[in-house]
Amino acid sequence: MMKGAILYYSGTGNTELACQYIVNHTKNVEFEMVNAIKDKAPDLTGYDLVGFAAFADFLVPSVVYQKFIDDLPAQDDKPAFVFNTYGMSSGQTLRILDRKVTDRGFRVVAGHSLHMPESFPPMIARRLGNENAPSDKEFRAFQTFAAEIDHIAFRLSEGTIVPAKSIDLGAMDKVMRYPKSMAKRMMGAKAVDPNLCTGCATCANVCPKGAITVAGQPSFDETECAYCWACYNQCLYGAIYTKKYKDKGRYTGPSARLRAKFI
Image (cartoon, rainbow, N blue to C red; front, top):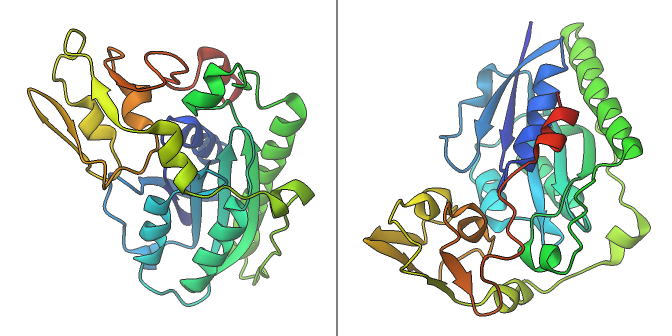
């Protein structure tokens, strides 16, 4: 049996859910899922196929995940695939993942972007949450991608050299750009409602940059903040807020409907 690893970064659970589907629906490779933010990167020597999966963060992979890839040991043409989820638009995410992974010496043999419910509070608050994503057509395309991964694993098990695949983008994704400074402007400084906060430290545990400390109540290092909204979305009591957003537009994770679709 081929061995594989999927190195994923999931801010809200959407990307993790999709990756778990790939794990459950590939029979020619036994995948291990590795949380790129919480888990130590494994020694990739013993893996035949490596997946890289993340979400679109202002049309690009999160800087946290990009650094994770940059810090991986150089490889010698190891087969890999790239995958991302997105809410409103995928932008350059898949192409940047392809470039980053290729620069580390991997051979990218497949790639896909999947439309998922929006997890960005400003968009949800504007009723642009895409809560019914993915559509049936989008989900079928994702299923085809999972089947492609399984077929690639089968070909690799037979000793076939699977060539690199050109990662193409849609016309709009090729031209769309957001300055990263916009993320900071849209979120702004965070504060805590002392009447709601219990000091549970969930916010500190989900922060990918370690920018939150809890001594009674959370304290935010705004110079380190990635403006990913993880603390806001995942606060169990809705205690974290910004100047513009207080307990509105929160995305707490995949709905029961979405989970049922990915069984």
